[in-house]
Length: 481
Image 1 (cartoon, one colour):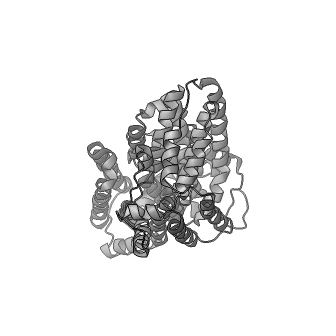
Image 2 (cartoon, rainbow, N blue to C red):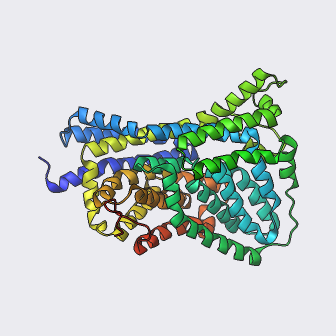
Image 3 (cartoon, rainbow, N blue to C red):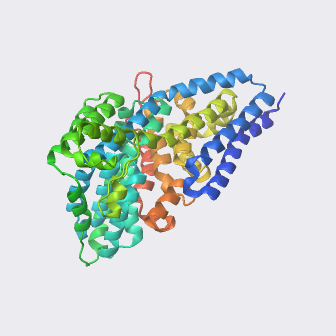
């Protein structure tokens, strides 16, 4: 029989093993860590956890297996949504919806509002695409070049871009982190997004004010020329105002609180139809065809939905922006989720998660303490396991039962996780996000960190709202604590 201290020591072993192994994987594979190394680390950690559970805690293997099955079943909807996000991303780009939005966004840039525009444009693109990485790797690169021409420091420009990109990554219904955080906690997607506005809107407003004021003082005086980028888009796509029907219709469906699966599917189908009518030449190009027959259009739409597509404009930044991966591009995230679910399931079924949670109980006695512990844990996991997906999964696994026991709504937990795990990942130099974004923008993490205002305002705002108690309710009677 294990003594009191040994029980807690053994419970921490799988988590420590995971952190150590992931550290090695990140060091060896760098930005490619999510291509399989992190998943394998999770599976091996699951094995360590299972071994301790069976031999140390004498938990029947069948119990562990049952919990894994139940846990995987709980994210079934999330996996479907992720696949639909890939479908929508491809059809929106090929149809010209995303290029149209980018084109008009580039038209409004002015030196004195450049930093403000960096944040707004990046945020807009990220909301539309649901991906901070895609936004930074495409429009972010273009904006960095513009910033250099205008005389802005790399830190200011990169900080504004990342603030906008991670605002979109946090608030977009197309974002895999947003879908993941809401689904693992059990919060409906759009309920989760609406509740996040309480902390996110003040944070982004403050960030925009700072960028607006800073732009007036640090703007350079060089001429700006975005014609190469906009000309490439205009020359390749039919940028018709009619294409805006797709995002408007999507917004209407979201406003009417339709299920996320229905919204994503309907929007993808609508974009696919628009692609046939407005961009038949693009559909032909993505499948390397020389005609626009019915069969070509069919194959082009299908490929844009499930596979990788590339459109060549003669402009490198545009080519990167217009490249999509469809549903296939979501498989890495799905793979990661399944592996993380296995680890979390065994950790939970063995009782180890409960033991770890017991160590944290003294910090979760109050509303402020509970939310602050969640936020700090998210940041801690970002700095230790070095990946925002793992941070989200581990935070949800650790705190879900406590929030339920205390009677708080699931949306409070999902919001607290996103206010920490999602937005602070890019501030950690050795995390996958930090390494990727600093490499893409060619700006060291420590250089842009002070200027990525939105990314560190969100955790602070989350704790502030918790202290105030604004719209934080108990499940029973909806009584505010």
